[in-house]
Image 1 (cartoon, rainbow, N blue to C red):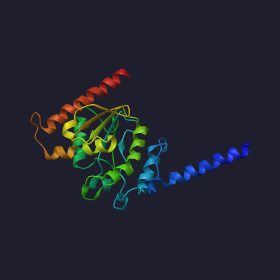
Image 2: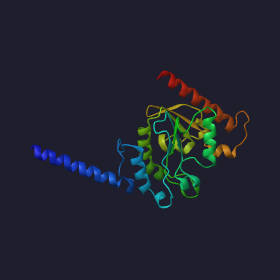
Image 3: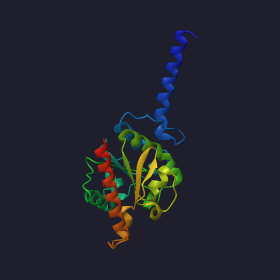
Length: 229
């Protein structure tokens, strides 16, 4: 094969690759290979154009993430609620305010120590749980977010987050507070703050008390990792 023919093949491949990248927000069948996005801004542009599932038709804003883009801890939730849909920021409603308090209780700052995002970037109607198809359509964006942030610890907030990323279908009550490994990363599932808002008791053994134990374990692991770096 001549040098000219080889060059032509590479040029054609580049064009095809670029064309396929432009189709990502339009069709869930188009894969999002590792390394697709150079930064979070580029990823957010696609999320804001996205119609890989039906949720794009009803959103006000895509909710990509907030916090330190190189945070050692990533918080992964389920999907945006109404306040998040209106603002374009994750965990800013009542559940988000409680999450901030939980993190602050062990001196974790959402601007420096944490990056917060969701399995789905668009709000499901009436705040219902995202379907498997909706999660599968959005999951490649999350995988790219994890690659870009490269956290040491992933904090799964609620059962849907665990299921959406790892496929583990166990109830959150069965797995909260247990360290698990996913893709070489340490992960900890905890109760969703919205669940804690419905279960206010601080008695020993109750969800709020258990969450306090869990977040202390996260802080201890964070300190251990930091010490060993």
